Length: 74
Image (cartoon, rainbow, N blue to C red; front, side, top):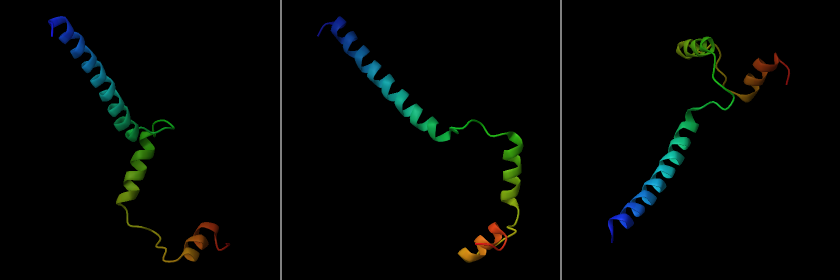
């Protein structure tokens, strides 16, 4: 093979690899993006603080959960 042929072959391979890397990058980054937009920092702080707290309610049955949610009504 001539040098020019090898360069063309390498360019094709590099282009294919660039496309593959772009696809993988988009797939990985999509998992970390919020489709609705970014969360407010105040919301994130509040949720992280609540995660550290002890739970205020413990639901052992479906009925107990629904009673809490609906205020006694089903």
